[in-house]
Image (cartoon, rainbow, N blue to C red; front, top):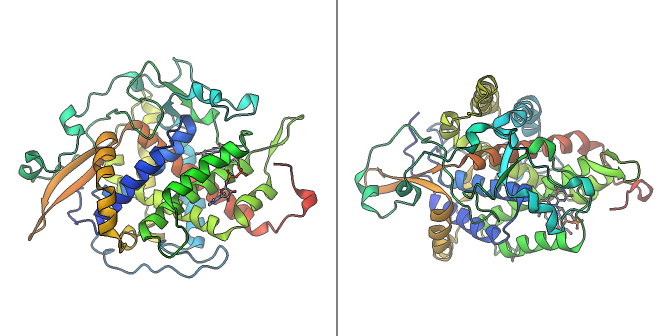
Length: 437
Ligand SMILES: Cc1cc2nc3c(=O)[nH]c(=O)nc-3n(C[C@H](O)[C@H](O)[C@H](O)COP(=O)(O)OP(=O)(O)OC[C@H]3O[C@@H](n4cnc5c(N)ncnc54)[C@H](O)[C@@H]3O)c2cc1C
């Protein structure tokens, strides 16, 4: 399907938000799994901001309405499906697809410099360190250097003669996997000697014993840098969105810690810690709301890059499993049940209508130019919209970014599922039921 020629409503401010997010979150260059979660959020931001797939003509301009918020019913601002619908499509459709996808070889292995992670003093449990894959375990095709785009197509073409001359729209959006170094991760992904693969199934997000001031400081600085005035009215829509995304990711991580908690260290007994779930997340309705917000946002990012994800090569050298991956990706992108229940999981057009667009534009232009050119392969094409020519920008995601994006969606889906299952049954726990944490 050719990319939509819609001039992405207020796309500029969306791109600025993405660039701001990249620059701000990028300051906390992270390793391993942590980098995956935060990095995937940035990929989602960029996908929603710049992906060429816009609204269908039938959806454009429609008011999707966001019913008022009661506790876990209705849906908060900026979201276009209510809690009940999200819970239903998550449980019936998305969660099963994502759970299966995450076990397949393509999505199972994540490239990073994780073996150094425990040295950062972030991990207090002996067995929580990240398991590196033996060389013969991860897929052979992942070892080959990429042979996709030319180096020239890896930099933003805006303002260059190529961008104004080429007015044709290429229907092939996937042009081979590319590898570049992302400034928001600690590692240099192009340096294969330094990199390794981790098996994500063996490294689940769960309680790692990383607590205390240093853990809190990371979150504090992420929040402070991105949202200094939140939740004051002065904050523009775009920055509120960034705050909600970070908070939603934070909620999701807390839900996973609660889901898989070391209940009794001496007996090595793991299980659900419901008081923890209540204290960290459920006690604060806005944290639950932000979790759903982030889930819908990332779902929107995935559906917006549908053309790309559909065409991408899921080659791991295991034809049977790769075919299954392809089929599940298609189900994820095109299952009619999802589209009929929640046609537009998230309406970014509504969100990007921030009044501070011009000021943001000034402030973030340099970030956009620097960070986006550096770490994302943009496919910028000039499109004629009648009166004026605008640039159509589409993403060329890296393999590791696609892996991170789908795994993030899976984790958010797991969190939503757990909150849905346990949320209504958890009242404020009595002190005697609390575990030390
Ligand atoms: C990217 C990342 C990944 C992590 N992964 C893991 C992991 O896999 N396993 C693990 O055990 N630990 C992980 N951690 C650490 C974990 O998130 C906590 O920081 C740690 O458990 C210490 O918790 P805390 O009680 O000090 O509060 P924190 O969760 O650190 O919260 C700090 C403060 O932020 C505020 N806050 C909390 N939740 C929200 C929210 N949803 N929205 C807005 N504000 C909020 C509260 O004021 C709170 O006091 C991760 C941290 C980061 C940054």
